[in-house]
Length: 163
Image (cartoon, rainbow, N blue to C red; front, side, top):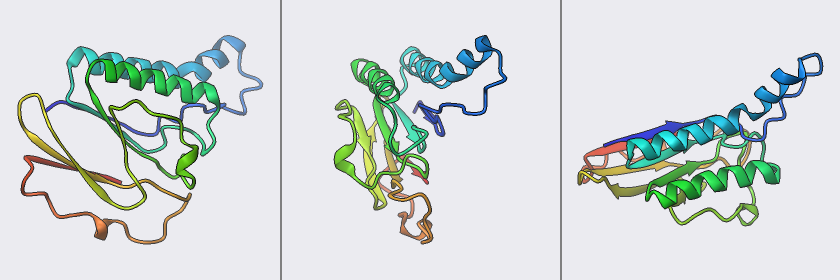
């Protein structure tokens, strides 16, 4: 099994407080996350991974700008074209309280809902993988989500938990 796990990408982060930073460095900082995601996708395609996990805070805010959304959608489409599945949870920075306002993701993308849910897949080498997780629907969660996760799925060779 081969997969890439990434979290806290914070796409669309304006990197405030850079007023005294030289313009050449400011531009590099402001495009760093976009470049990192592009390289992540390049690496996933070259390595022919079975899937990619984006484990929360892909965006820096619950209302990402259109450019940040388009950048991510374009990269996810590249993964779709390479037949690589993507599993996404939303974290405390990009939490979802209105699922209807999300952009249209490519068909290879599975979004975890608010309740702990388990998805199954089979790798190219015929291993079975269970992935359990949930998405934040508000910035802070006070209930213990761990107790809602299933014990290892005995029908799967691997079981991954996303929190």
